[in-house]
Length: 261
Image 1 (cartoon, one colour):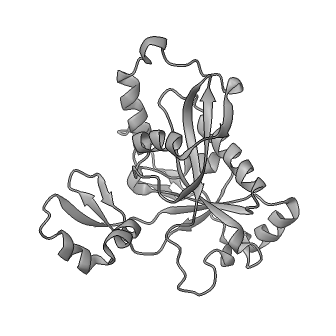
Image 2 (cartoon, rainbow, N blue to C red):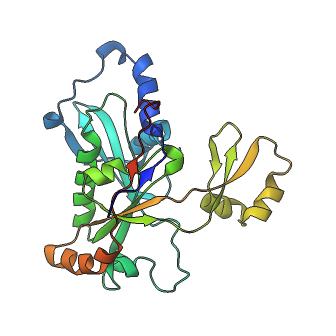
């Protein structure tokens, strides 16, 4: 099988990091020296995670986060990863939506990597080290597998998930209509729109925003889905035997010579 090439440009988080790197000199004490061997990883509060996620992450919200972990250089937090409840789960087939992937036995023991971001001055391997640490911590809490998504609207193909050896199992198929400001910034995704206003779907949302010229509705592009097995060797073997037929080659960025990557 060959990799699928995706016509996706530079990732949103990279664009943001480059933007801040131009204007930030670190203030009075300068930007911390980042030696990955000297980094410290630990659990952080919701508030600590929120400060970085809202500044660097594409969606600009905390989502359904429960557990938050950070990577530090000296006393400065250089990145966070957040785990929480599953989002956008398709239950049309009945039963648990991830049972077809890892089996009924462990389907209820999963968690989603919902948010993650590193600051512009972080060591280049901070993200992968942070994800590995976060997976280890949620595994200790009894979770057997983790799920994560990469968003093409944010210029993502799942580079860090590929670097940390997650399994790629294809793109989502559900249709979701999200609401955006006309300048391109997300106003509210389908799930949060339903939670706040009590309805969803193209027709009703279009009627709602008809008198709001600064808003527009967009069909969400399919997201790439990744799964990481984090149980014991025996548990992972059982889940892998079920998952194996669904594993696909990693998607790759279709590099255009006119795009600075």
